[in-house]
Length: 173
Image 1 (cartoon, rainbow, N blue to C red):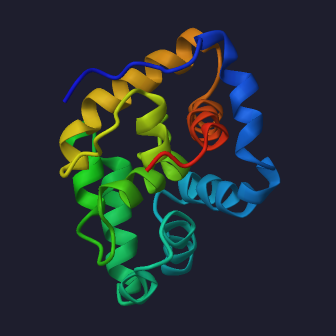
Image 2 (image 1 turned 90 degrees about the horizontal axis):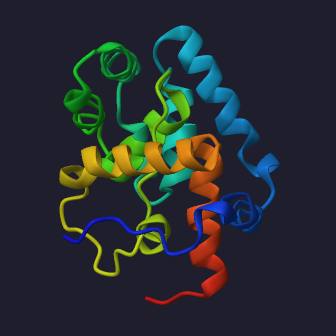
């Protein structure tokens, strides 16, 4: 896999973030993320809302997770100091793969995390999508944190810019 390479000038992050759409569209999941950080875990209802925001197709599988399982898996993922376990732990939940786990961390973890998304990867110069998204997670997190830092934005703004840039270019799949 080639290294990540931002496909637009770093100074244009805010410009491309506007192409994402209305930030109010994310208001519900952003509020859930704040609540989860305060609680230290997600409830079943909160989990279903966040997981459904990222991926609607496995909704029945998301709903099959017991309340206690959701609470304890997310409590562990949000609390462990072992970086490598955070994403992988969330995939213990039914219907959660790496990309949905990244959305849960993005919204709910106290540390900043990017969203793993096809559009974001294309905006970072990755044309062939990975078969094992989780394998790229450490490098992707480091790259996105560095880009956000250098652009002077948070990871939500960077995520919107990566998505917006690819969307503006049109569907290239």
